[in-house]
Image (cartoon, rainbow, N blue to C red; front, side):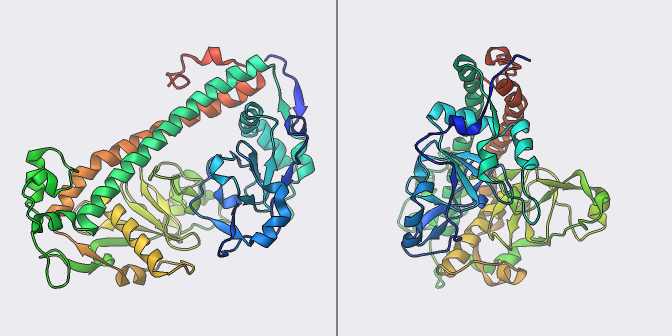
Length: 446
């Protein structure tokens, strides 16, 4: 291993700004409030800003020091300590919760360097060894400022960052593609099964099958076979003729979850993924392959946890409510979730998007109040306009290739992340250089 200079983290920060943390008062929902980043926004060394909290402007005004700027490093200091993210430009004007630390790097190059170094095992070990775990894990600013940072010469740093950034760029490209694919699948679902676009167009006199289906199925032969399945008028209830609103619980099989005893070590750290809310896929990745915790066959048999197969939708029902995922492999899940399987035919993607639609309706019905729980009765109380089995099957055949591509991209990203995590400490320490990674399956140059 080559010799690399090590410096305390504070030396790489902007001397005109402080290493600090955010607002002491927890965020609440305020009209016109200032959004804040909280620990639960950290996901896989990125920020997921789907769940937002706010603080009153008069409180936020006293904490101008912790307003993040683009390229600042954010780090979790309480609970799940040591998670890091680079502040994106979209959070300019936001602030931070007190459990989030702010590291103002001297420039964007050093920001990227800190971002990667802080993910290495040596940095993470330092953080956890210096944490106060008396009640809840906390990491203080003085120790944060003194984290030893390997600091080779600029050429070696650029070399390492080039490799790591190339891998992350490919991962991000896959994520953006997943967003496009997921948006297309949702557009088809909404047009056909929520807005009843084909029925409206037929009723309006459109005869071209491709146009009847909104141009979402450009092959004329396939479009004809699907278009004939839709009626050309509406019934007195406002639904397509022949359709009926049915409780969502009639369309799916609802499976409850469970948790093996945490005091039994033989029940844990096995090979069976055990899904909880923290395992919700980021953005439009949709599929979950790996979970933070695994259980053993003994843990499965000794608890109310149930095994589900690939393609099953999982929905979080308590705590953070309404998160959705599709199991990419056989797994189980905790009692704060439900699994949803189609009860008529094999329609996993119809089930997933129907559940997504149900969640949107429930949130709309809440009128801004706290959307706190989902029960079996919830699924019974919310109806869905149910098309024929033939239409559901036609939708499934159209959506399946889109979801298959999303699944493949997520799996590729897991492989890329493993390659990045293997290289990370070796590049940071100078053990290897970027030029030596050229033949690693093309990951660095993808």
